[in-house]
Length: 288
Ligand SMILES: [Fe+2]
Image 1 (cartoon, protein in one colour):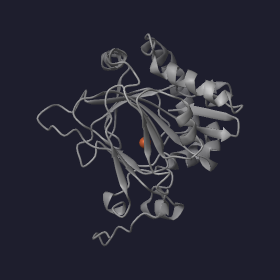
Image 2 (tube, helix red, strand yellow; image 1 turned 90 degrees about the vertical axis):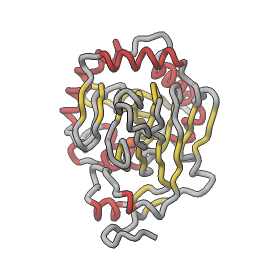
Image 3 (tube, protein in one colour; image 1 turned 120 degrees about the vertical axis):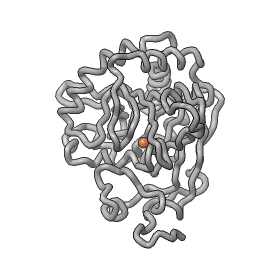
Image 4 (spheres, rainbow, N blue to C red; image 1 turned 45 degrees about the vertical axis):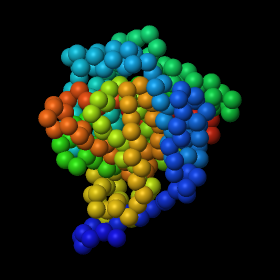
């Protein structure tokens, strides 16, 4: 039980022990991603799936890019790519339109891991008559990826949050992505560098509407006070350079901080990321 009198525990959907696992593989295979997309399992990690030299090249391009931006206090860090959080659809699509050519250039490397991932996923989805493509609206498409490096200085580098709530943001009610709300909202992360720790913390709880409303997180999904989560089982997933990990983003999750305070927090945990989900039985859309 929690000892904080002001913060009630978050309640919601809790997966059983068969579901609440991160399956591990020593190479990339698309079929397990389908299990996450279909809600059969919480997550999957493909260890050493991307060659280190490919990761190093993309990370170097990210840090050297004049288009790399700083993100504010709600999620301090650097990023390149458009993100949907707390934004109207038109703004997101404007930003996506601007950044997609930059991402195309940046990811134009031999063995682009996004290309490899989606090629594999497309093949696997085709067997069940489904496709994967960027989310669209009026002929405009979502940002193909988001590169980011978190370095919040508190208990977490990225605060506990869920990726589902923002899909219900009324500012984006007209965005095709909204179709995922009845299904699994899935996060794709490719670890480009992580030399000083920074595990993924992942709680076995998909918060219900009442809990979100009580905490004022109905459309932001962030941040959940740690005291509201202590009743729930937590998994800590180590991620290393070259790992691809895919998980159900409706569960509360966070990024642990860098453990070495003697070194700068920059350039320590950089990921290439996207979100995805089925919007109907035959279509998986991606956004960032
Ligand atoms: Fe997330």
